[in-house]
Image (cartoon, rainbow, N blue to C red; front, side, top):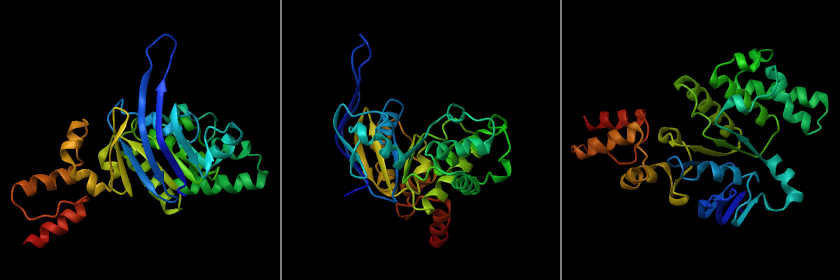
Length: 277
């Protein structure tokens, strides 16, 4: 059994007298433990709605979601589910509540009822993992956007979930902040965490195991990054853009260079171009 399973999942927003809005339709998805998958799509494609289904913040209107074999519709198990799946959201300022970094990271373990010595050990480990141990006494609001997001990640990491869902965590960051957060996510991946990464930045999904593209609430593609980036017409129709390297490879192949179509990184492209000489 996969760690996360979605079977024919749909979600419809129903607010007052407004007409219902269907955000997701017939989503089937399996995520294995230790896998890193990316979910991409334009604004309004249903990405953030899907994110909130992964740990029971939302319940599907239709279909079924199970986490570690537990059905998210079972309210008696929802606390257990949320201990397995942590979430990091788009705006770091909306996630931070403490006046000191180490207090922020300790908040989650404290709510788990852990003894003080265990909390201190988890805070130390989490701050080292995100590279912010020297900022333990700092006020979060004095940090950069990338550092704030890393504090939020440390707070989730300290709770030891099996899976972390990132809902567009770099959308509000500058390039340096994005780089810091992406490096931290790769460290989490090396720790064996299951990562679900939701974004509209196509270049951020190059290293993922699988890519899922959503459009108007439906899954229109699932495959490796190489397979996804070769579906150029589909990507264009979904109002997305190829990352720089796959796009450059596509144009060079159009110009007659004998390059394989599945090159994703600058280093690989340079290697292949050198071989042409």
